[in-house]
Length: 275
Image (tube, rainbow, N blue to C red; front, side, top):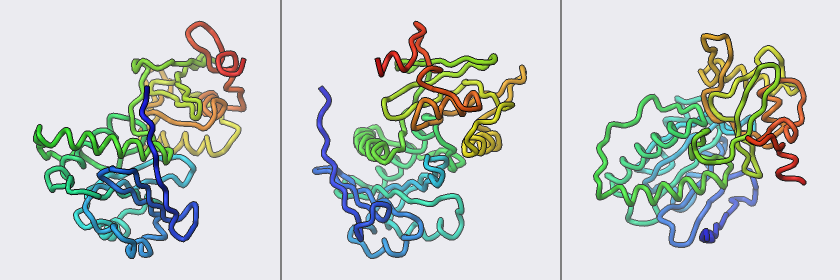
């Protein structure tokens, strides 16, 4: 049986999309979510100058597209340099120490671990050019893994899943096929995720311009590549709020994802989840 987790959220100034603080009882970290325009305002909050790791994210289109991960020894002040030099991000998520766990060794190891996990997840365009070469002690790894588990949980509650998903991951994989295009995905009940190696019908535009723009962005940054057979293939996990959004993105046009996506026995999502 999964354990129950209780999360407390404080909305600074009472704004749902403003500065937020996430806390769990006995957790080694506190999480500050700071929209870029409120960066200076957030500097006055209690606890924001502690060490930790942070994620700079770009989710202006409604889904996380790009991120950068770093460490800070002086909390939110570290972001001043990024505010001046990095244009892509619109939100910072800081995981700052609420205990003595964050030694400098743990901090460096956690940064390295988080970057590697983000790359392994293959979901987002990770702005970090390389994984730090810092050598993590085997004695620090249990603490790092425990803290990262908390980070991964909080990121998921914010809508940003950091775990990896593949056709071999053991999850139920659904397939859609039309006009010679074959794509794969998983369904969580809340999101539908199109998996790497799915083919994309670039020649047929989707009915929503935002999906066409997403295709072009992925083509530009290597998220979609053209193989030797002339087919366009997805290279990372892409998440959608509905099965139909996922099938529209893959197949183009306007589709009914509840009928398009099928399991290995040919059962549609509609039959599996709505019957």
